[in-house]
Image (cartoon, rainbow, N blue to C red; front, side):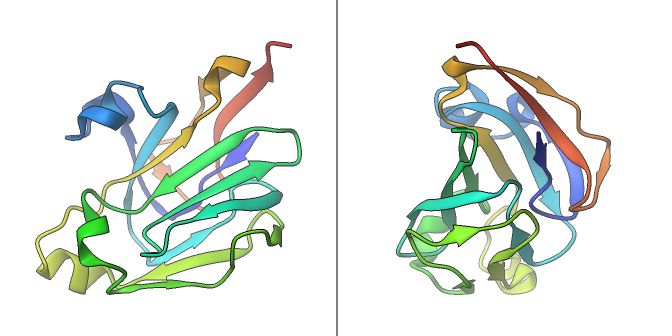
Length: 149
């Protein structure tokens, strides 16, 4: 089970304006329009990748699911501006732990959409079911994963 890493509004992944995400090429999951500026761990596990720009983070859950959280569209171009990481690669994390904070207003002012994909990148190993409600808190379940193996 994967909980929402951000408070906000549920968006279908196929409805976002990013070919890599909406096609499922990067994995299966959902997107979120953030209402708050904090990303928390959607699972317990470890940080397997933290982009130097802090706009995206990869997590491997204790059960082996690989989850990518990508804050905003094309926000890599901000080169880390307006993002702060609260963890580092290799850290052990617990569900609900603060991972990244970001400045919603400054990112919007810079012209970047904040739509945030949350995808299971090793989705071929799982049956992925979207169970997200329309309005999300960080306590809400968004994805149910059933191992195929």
